[in-house]
Length: 159
Image (cartoon, rainbow, N blue to C red; front, side, top):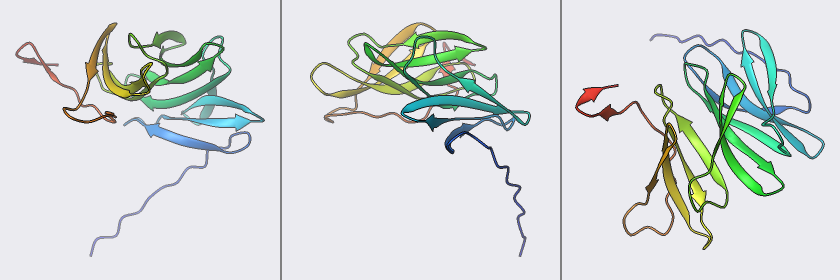
């Protein structure tokens, strides 16, 4: 019988925290809470970097790909929004008609999958593909929650 050995790393965060995603390089993202405020974090190379979307009240980091692109959700005075962090450059991810977007996963190409709440209280899935949104609704379902994405085929070629 083969025995598998695991290595564990403790990430010390103020007030504790929650790891949400890890990429193949071992970079970890998640969030921690200080008082009533949530902050996202990136753990990379033994260092913790706080991730706070500009102008946000709360930020949670939810996913990271191997290129270091980070997705998450932040809240400001107008509500909840998704975000994409590309090396400190933040892009808001708000599908048209959304009242709170939550990105769930990002693939190697930077495509983001998640869900959003509409004005009628219905959750729809979405694909964010470099500035373009596609709504994803499972036929016959009231709500749709896509949670993962792989690199996909495009235009007859592999990307």
